[in-house]
Length: 432
Figure 1 (cartoon, rainbow, N blue to C red):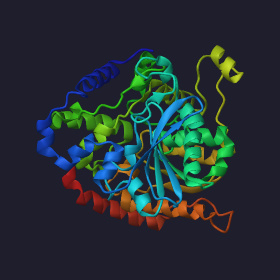
Figure 2 (cartoon, helix red, strand yellow):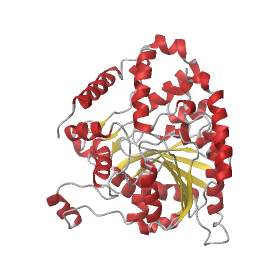
Figure 3 (cartoon, rainbow, N blue to C red):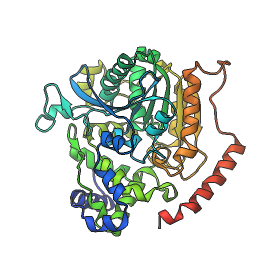
């Protein structure tokens, strides 16, 4: 595949950023960010919980294919369990890194839940195996998000239910955390009976219409990188984005080209924390699988080559995931300015899912791929509705079982859009 001159420039820019990634200096950070945030950047998930006076536990789970995973729990013994699964390159810290007044993990705990935060294989806290060494055995990295859905999630769900004594739990997934639950619930449909409701934040399945400006570069770059490579492992050092205001703005420009630009919802004060906890590591095969979805405009298993596909699947092409087998209630929350998840692709997904109970496209036109979990307004404008829908289906759902998926009314859209305009004015000082 040929690479255009523009793509070469982007590739060179990404290479330079990678070289800077571990070269952070303290002067700019100390002058521009609070000491408490810089401390949060260096703390683990359990240390963050302890700092903010929340209980914390670590639990270890081994999958059927011998990957060893960590879960971090905000324990409330006897309360209903909820399992949270992060996205690509992320970890359990995604749910709490924005602090007690914003993080979804804290919000659910304060609402009375026993909160379990998963870590997918290959990420910072789940980088272990019963036989393979991730530092020396390339075979360790021979997985995609398919294996996260097919092996990791059932092991995690079973462990939570065994520990708590409940027969069901509620599930939250963001981005890849939605892809993996769609894999599980469609390929191992018996697990639908163990889930009260799937809350899918920025759902990723069909990708044929994604508008990410870096998608062409990604295809070229990962064709060179190839399968089964460790990708951007976690580093405890504050990264080179914080050498100066110029390097920070360069990093933000790349971030916005991935997720969608929305400075109004960006909590700039927290950037040292968010940009140190992420990236947290992954396999290049996870990205390649997503790129295959973009190219094929299908939601299907990994495409090896015709000969290998024939051996694994009994056919030359990988099979589509049987979404019609997902019988658990599904609540979808998505945005219009998400470069990773196009609205038209989400609508296509909705038509395939048999039990969508919430079709919630946020009315704020500038909200992007991460705003509903990290945005300044997430606690006020996103989390309460998620909790309300989850509690409804924990109680068995609405009495009228033929009730259509809930959507936001025109009047509500107008009101919330006006609130967003106000929020943008109030937070303008944070983004100068």
